[in-house]
Length: 283
Image 1 (cartoon, rainbow, N blue to C red):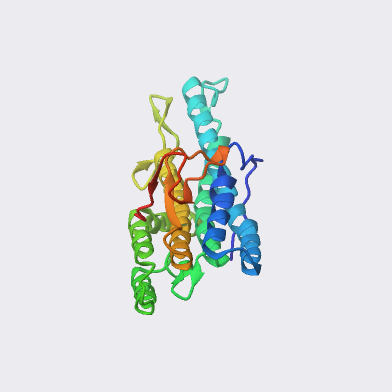
Image 2: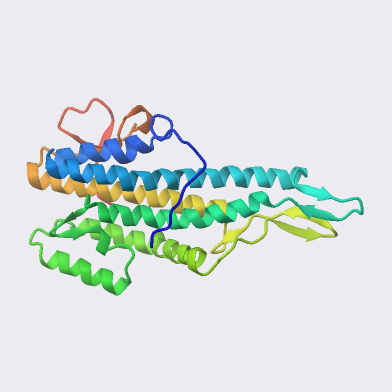
């Protein structure tokens, strides 16, 4: 059963954050170059917008809400705003931020998995020789079976580099991310307290996940998950554009990319390139 998630933030996911240019405008432009525009495009792009983009937006908002809550709580513990003392001198901590951070960290991990699952269900990365949904949150043995089955049935071995990209992502962060998500969602994992007490005084101590400071590990997962999604989609369309339309459709990386200004990172270019680029290495 899919958990319903939400954030309290009403974000501008377009011009300010670059979320829409990066994950919607850029990807649909690459799709059209690789496959053209037609009924399949209309169907998949609508589903992608309604399900994948909405989950990316929530993922973005949850991450930044946690950052803000964490910073406010850290400063409030240090400067005393969240410390209370009664008439008898007893000290207590206002922990509403801590409760909210615990909730949002759990939602962050659940939502991250939903982003990946929704992308797999969207069909944006599915054909006879590749199915993203069969390669992500599966056991290593199942991943290898599915990968080998796709490769053995494809004379071109067109997606060999994508399988390597996925395999590296699984090793580097996806498998651990999913295990941590399972701890929070099903094993009732909670963060450590934000404070230590010495001589009746409160001292700030950042909680840890998997031995890493909270914000450091959340930033690692957030950045790697979004970077992985962008790469797997861009590379998939780059490979298909080259197969369907020839070498004139070569995928490049724009070095001065700027999503809020609609300067996409991944683009198809001919010999005339009016801005700095480099060929995509699919690594």
